[in-house]
Image (cartoon, rainbow, N blue to C red; front, side, top):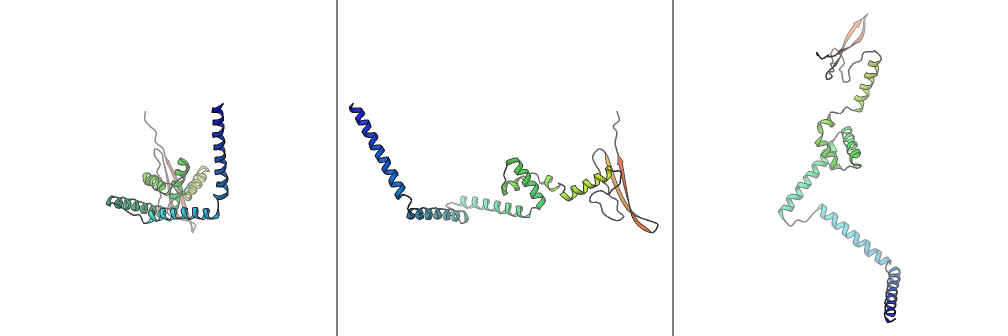
Length: 193
């Protein structure tokens, strides 16, 4: 019986102490003065962290050189990002976001650098639209000029792998009126068995 009295007394003392801590914590812990001190502390820590990033203090030459390397890389990424053509930037960002779900400026530049030849040679939406119009009119049996062909008496040829389709255009005069002549030639190659 003695041990049960001791245990219940210890539990009672712990409960009273816990109640006192909670009571005083709720009533005196959230004073406006405490909130101001906490806010001032957080603001000073934030200011110090920003200051350390903008103007860091170095304790060795290696730290100085490492910081400069990182700063030069960041500057290079900023410059390349700002000079990137809008369509290329949209394409690279779309690929990165589709793959990862999000993207950073650094990730965009690394993706572009790794696949520059692909991104620089993608057709623009205007070229895709013009090519679609060309394919639509060609499917209807009418001849058209190739996308990007030049006006005038110049011939334009579009070569495709394996089979070739050539588009030629030139000016002519019929009955005193000027016309453009468009000629489409298909060349197919059959394998000899």
